[in-house]
Length: 544
Ligand code: 9MR
Ligand code: ZN
Image (tube, rainbow, N blue to C red; front, top):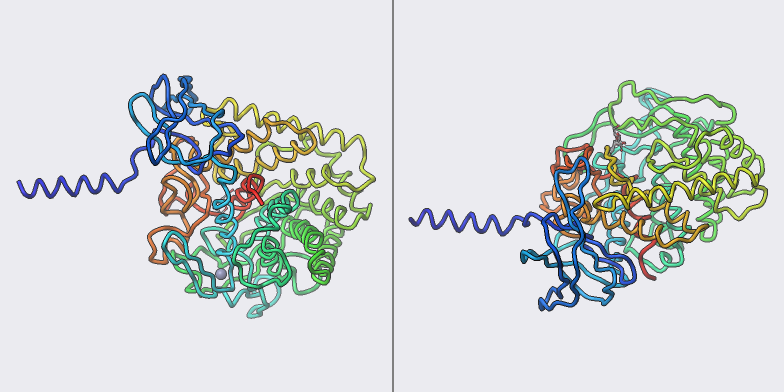
């Protein structure tokens, strides 16, 4: 009997410590006061109420609608729309059977903490330096790592070495890859360009690595300092595709990773990505650091010159390496390189190169895009540029496409049971894509203001923080029942139970196969290209 009682107590305790199965899908961070607020629930209910979480007092009731079903999900949901309720506070939703949702907020700045934490995640990715953070009662830190980056054996001389220290780790692995830096930096510079009025007021408690820079740009300079080291030492302007070991390491802390890391051979995609980033860096850093801005521009122009001399696609061949491939075709990257140099310098030769390339493309704007394809970034820089000289015809065509793609994204979200702007498309890193679609929407909203673009952008954010089939946040340390076991070497090796905070995980490769398991690199890893998209997505919805 006593044994049974003890067993029962143990079972009860275990049940309590496990988060309850969440039948509610909602942004578990919360909702902005003056915007749509729609949650869903996977249990039939005819009505619902909104209650103040502290007192249980009912402040709003309404009818539920549904059921709604969707292919690939073995569930049906009812929608709970409380958009008209706008009073600030902490709330829960309650349905007919008495079930209550996780707590969430309504307010005018409910994403600020998430924004700061996900931006600061870049600092915590710094390579070549020690980093530290206090979060949720835990301390996260590592010592300076990879101070021997990098060896030149694969590009110039056996046994040679040159400084390649710094930058961010790419993901759950500690490698550094130029192509993925391209889309990540591009998105972050867009965040700065579009929202610097707000972002310039933020400080992120960063070490003083770039005096006089606003904190947001300070972090980006950490990456460009490293990128500048990725050009070949021969002055040709070619850029190494990556700097990694030949294979992935075990789950060890970065400072314990002492296997040799190499500059790899160049690729045209990496070289063109480099040009795009450095041209942007030159432009955005100039007000704070003219000398460095000149250095970035000179580096960009040398690499651009190399690309002009070498117009063929030059693929990176893995050879001895089996770390990340990032073997991107280079047309989009070359397009981006040209337009960023034009926007930075005004030199019409760059504009001609860009327009010539763009005019040959069947499609100019994409709905679904990741590191393989940065064409959107190129076209958006062009569309938003205030420089003269654009071809009116091309401009009009590109603008029309940008708007029709945004409209199509709005329609996808509208038809999805979780209002996911990517609809039912799932693949490695698709959570990042959902966040990245916010750029499509925000840009369209700039020339064609439409509340539906903003509501759909918010739907992307809602999806990532719990308006999904799991009813869970996809970002570590934030929202309800977030990932605990990301495929992240630091998080797995540091002896702290909770993972490093603020990181978005890749998401399922099908509608229902996401698992919060460390081994699941294809659904539960973290990576800079997804993270940068999250930073962009949140940046538009924070207050000064
Ligand atoms: O994000 C990348 C995804 O699109 C690819 O399908 C996948 C396989 O090539 O690689 C992903 O990128 C990984 C990279 O190769 C190495 N670092 C971790 C990245 C995130 O999983
Ligand atoms: Zn490192």
